[in-house]
Length: 111
Image (cartoon, rainbow, N blue to C red; front, top):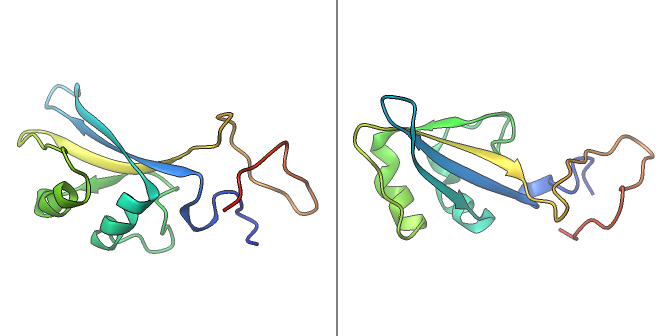
């Protein structure tokens, strides 16, 4: 098991797609599941960050159609900027990254 457990291989993560209008007002916010993210991950140049845990990535208009296919009901506003990034989804909301020899701070869902 990777030292990144419980987030290894994108487990216990969700991805938030957020759109902001010209006045920085949020115009859309959608949460993607791991399965939805896997369907569109190849559209981003993620390099050493295959699960988008290091920050948010701009969603350019050229890939909006692919995202619409992966996420039913998703809409895009022409004048908005969209970003996609991961966040933890542990049942109790806490973030946990183990150190060597440290046990999990409670029940952690299996991968």
